Image (cartoon, rainbow, N blue to C red; front, side, top):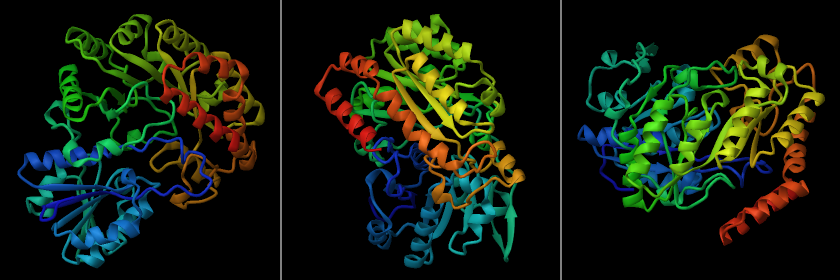
Length: 463
């Protein structure tokens, strides 16, 4: 991290509590959002630095000396709900050591709760929603009352300027400043990568669907897409400059606009790009034809948001899919030769032990290659949180407990302790089946595969 820069962007430490089931399973990947901000700032003539404490495995005690050496007049700190307390500690440390520094907070949590952020006197401003165009205007010194998308204090009064319109042409945004990000230090979700090194990439922003548990709508529901040509250029940059051999798309639904998917695949094939990739998709947005094309173009895994094996639960959370649609999408994907991963959520409204068992049975019936299981967590800005608050079901509002691995809602139909126990029960019963173990052994192709499978098995046995 260099000194004498205009702004230091910080992804705060993410400290998982002892015993957290996800600690050794989850991905820890460079903060692309900060990379985008840094790239736009550099394009506008500013110099930036990035301290990605989460990926670099640093705690507050590690980064405090770095902040002392920081001479930047601006510091921007990113915050999700789970990392909000950590972000606040970083902001306090910045202001304590560098009182003249302007401290800005951005991300999903301060977007939804700017008042909560600004109650801390060491936070000067909140950038709401997309900050790509907002942050440069702050650094340019424009009058704050003319900058859309910010919240701040003015003579002790909180001011919330109007929202900034969403960026419509994503191709206008420069690629993330990968030269400032710890690309080589990223860690992928266990079992997902076919080849390494791999990198995350975003091909679109927004999601049009109305799942009651999702925070995407809080940042803007309108879906905007990058062109296939633009995505391919970024992949080439990652391959040429960082030796990347695999891409993990972070889009909520990569296959939503099938013309774009087809165009992207055809470009990969036409230019003979040797890269493997995976994505997330909705079961209603795939067809046999597009799946076959994706396979030919290097796609090796798709993660479907399935959530439950009970259709009443699916209706309760606004998923708007059927189990038959899930069966068809998973079957088509398998026929195309692409691995299937299912994402499930326990503890939804109406959940009982019987519905939890139905979810486990459905996972086994689908014979998925991988499953990812979370416990429903009422994140800020979601309908499920508003429902839980109205019904008095929230057990805690301590953001450090919002880890998706333990219940924070007390449902009237099932004890939270039972839901928490089922998280481990389902993982063990799904992955430790003899038929599943045999299937995984047959897919081993390298020493890395052996190491990964042994690590996963030990984690499941200890859980």
